[in-house]
Image (cartoon, rainbow, N blue to C red; front, side, top):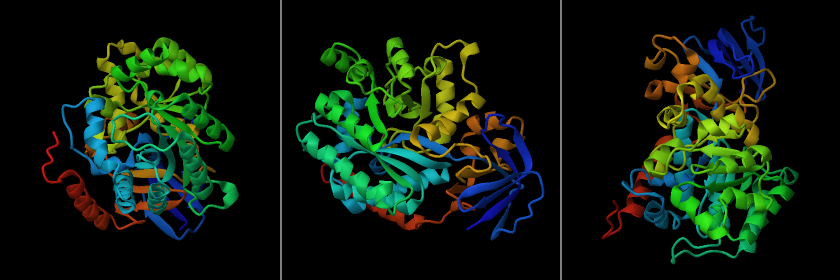
Amino acid sequence: MDFVIKNASVISMAEDDEIDSNCSIVVRDGIITALGREPIHEHPERVIDGTNLVIMPGLINGHTHSPESLAKGISDRSTLTAWLKKIWMPLDELKPRQIYIATLLCAAEMLRTGTVSLVDHFRQTPMTPEAVEAVAKAYSKSGLRVVIALMLRDIRQYESQTLLPAPDQLALVAKAHRQFSDPDQKCIFENIRIGVGPSGPTRCSDDLLEGAGEISTRLGLNFHVHVDENHQEAEEAKNRYGMTATQHLHQLGLLNPSLSIAHGVWLSNADIELLAEAGSTVVHNPVSNMRLGSGIAPLTALLEHGVSVALGSDGAASNDGQDMFEALKAAVLLQRVAGVEAKYWITAKEALPLVTSTPARVFGFGTGQITIGAPADFIAINRSGYSFTPQNDWHRQLVFGGNGLKVRYAVVAGKLLLDDERITTFDEENILAEAREIGMRIYTKPGDHVV
């Protein structure tokens, strides 16, 4: 449907980033075709009154794990290693229908909190074609733009894990790309791309890492990997390789603009310089890092060295939600208690590109801006609520507004996926009901006691 929103306030996130009030935005064929205060002479199918709306680019979640949407609140007082075993053993046993429901539950929460694009570092151990098809079909149904980075590993975390040989895992990635995201195959899932996602350097052989790099280069896929999530992981890499995980990836020839690393909490200064030189990206997950006691990523240092930085929520089991406004606020405020001098603190306005234009460029999600000719991927927030009353500074009140920010519309490729607070692409109530039932079964088996 073509439509126009009239008399809204627009935060474009373009280079000039002026705040336009009483502005109209016209959407035709998935593209923004007109923008500004001039009278609109076109006659689209629908006109939306934007008097009480502030419009901005849709948020981008640079790192999550959709199956974890079934595992909110499962564990407390657990650091990463213990937490992984508590959370993921049941999740690795999910059936395709359960994966489908978990993914739509994740999508629903993101839509309601302003996220329109994401990177799902999708884990199932062992990975199967049926699991991949389930997550792809769910995201296709949702309408969100997604990179599904299929998680690979060939080194066990615990003895009961079943792992496929490295060549079989890489072949599965190539097959999924042909099936779901290869433009030459005229795929029906236009909003989905497959990526390659090794779990982490110490959970993969060098053969698997190099194979992932080769398939990323050959097929043009995003390469997404956990690096230095906590101090234990960082030390494990040094003990195994005699150098940091980032330096080892560099030695294998894997640092390049297609590479994004999740977390990077314990990066060294030398690591940061390598990432900057290579044009690689760090995806900072502040809420998850606090939840698991993993540490505080060096956001200020990364930005000062010119490293590309995006933000992620991480999975809902280490966050308990998928709210990227929460992640944005946490990222900004954490630097202020991390010993960084006030004159170097990142401001609210400087932080907004971390969830819009930067990840849009890195992951191929359009421009992350509201400009004529750009894909119509944006959100409209109620400006009459508490977060904007009174309205003093748009950028600060967006970043620090918290739960007072109410998303009314979410648009992806010109489609109203959230229309006046109603999800249009799937039955949200049925998804919630089935997710409750699945969650009760997988984490309340007789004799289970999760702490």
